[in-house]
Picture 1 (cartoon, rainbow, N blue to C red):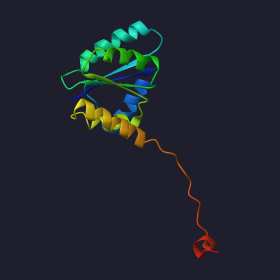
Picture 2: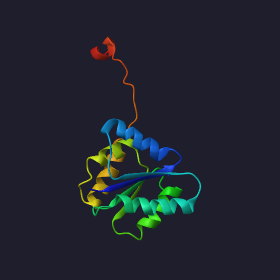
Picture 3: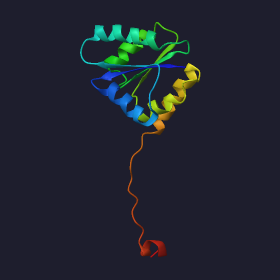
Picture 4: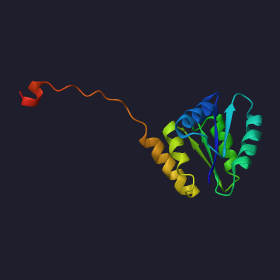
Length: 138
């Protein structure tokens, strides 16, 4: 089963996990790391978290912002590890979907999460109520 590390600025990672847990229940093999200010401390905690959740199937670090400090730290760590991937721009539908796809191969899992994340970004558009004149073609 693929392990998860969820990190991001402030309460983002904790909030994401709590939201998903409300829907899916308890989640195993996951570590949450809020980033405040200390980059060196974040590096140490991420390395330890990856080791904690790795069981042989790989680890995915879900981060809030591609290019942000948590993403950059995770990416640097992942560059030295064959079985660690990083996703920036994590959203709740992506993370929820991830819970049910953890048995996929790491590469297939990443492709699916990126697709699911993109497909679940929607805009609400109010459809206008049709009048009798619209229906009659007047």
